[in-house]
Each structure stands twice: as structure tokens, then as C-alpha cells.
Image (cartoon, helix red, strand yellow):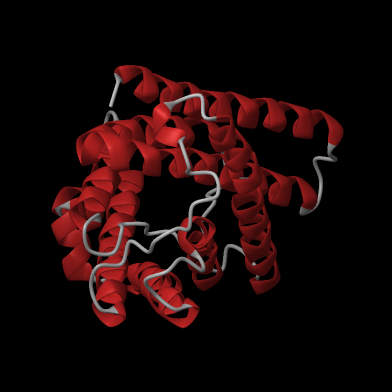
Length: 263
């Protein structure tokens, strides 16, 4: 494939990020800053941005390999970490907040709904872009039937998504507490590495909303299997990270004795 096609994919992803930033600026000016509405709008924008870029990352991975996919994903996650603010575009972070007493079950449900709406609805924009076929890699992709990324049994896939999500969340919590220099880059590198490690097994989504937007209804697994792998697997892994991170032996291993004493 020509580098021009890769350039088109890059321009599309940059365009999505720019459009999302414009949407955030407009929402801050047009939507009241009080209540749950601005929070939901922010989550919907973040999820739309995430899923639009990841739809295009599928094109990159299919045509230019996992290495190009990983580089693009790393750059994008660093950017998202800087501009999303309180949004996560991922429902299990809100589940963790419920367990920690930082939010209510109602807010968790509403945020998840907003993320699903933003992530799933943005496909129509992506589909139009693919239909225009600016790049040879987009030919026939707009109306092509999708295939599941799950290459193992659903239960093994759920374990992979769950364990990887657990590790990812433990890493994020550790970096948040230790606050090392370049923490966002380290966090993005760890997340990207885990995605690449799971890529040929479960797809390495580690985000139920992202997996649903990209792969719900695709041939290769049933909808029930999709829920087991990408919702139950990932959410259980994230929820388990809360009590596991509080274990003294885990905190000593991740933070070190000195940091624990300072806390």
C-alpha cells in the first residue's frame, strides 16, 4: 500500500481530533456548566472521537501492520490524555468510582449511555468518509460486512480482556499516585503494549464501548459472546483492580516502601 493511503488515514484521525476539540469548545459556550448535562456531552464527544479514530486504525492495521497501528494508537492516547479532562469514554472507570464512593449508580449509567450514543452514532460519519474512497485502502469498506477480532474461545477472550484491563488499571493507579515525570507517556506506552499483546487473540479493546461500537453484530461471535468477552471480561478486570490495589503487598510492590510511608 502507498504511503499516500496512510497519509489519508492520518489526516482523517487528526481531523476527528480537531472536530472533537471544536465540539468541546462549543459545548462549553452553549451548554450550562452545572448539572449532569455537560458531563454527558463531554463523554459523548470523547467516545465519538475515540471510536472514529479507532475505526480508521482498523484500516491502518489491516493494510500497514500492527507496528503502524501501535504508533498511531500511542500518539492518540497521549493526546486524549491531555484534552479529555474528566471524560474517559469507558464505562468501567465509572464503576470504579461507584465502588470508591466518588459517584452514584445513576451517574455511572448515564455516562455509559452517553458514551454508547457517541461511539455508535459516529460510525455514520466514518462510513461516509470511507464511501468517498479518498484512499485505495477505503475501497469497498463503507458497506463491507465486519468480522470479529476474537480468535480464541469467548471464555479465554474474556480472561485476556479482563487480565489486561486489570493490569492497565493497576498501572494507571500507580502512575497517578507516584506522579513520575512523563507519566502520561508511560501510561500510554503500557496501554498500547497491552493492546498489541492481545491484538491477535481478543483484539485488545479493553473498553466495552469501543468494542461495541466497532464489533457489535460482526460475524465470528454471537452478541452474547461479545458481552461475555468485552463487557463482563473488561469490567470485572477493572472492578477487581480497586480492592487489589489496596492490598498492602500490592502497594509495596507497585509504590515501594518509601512512597507508602509518605502517604
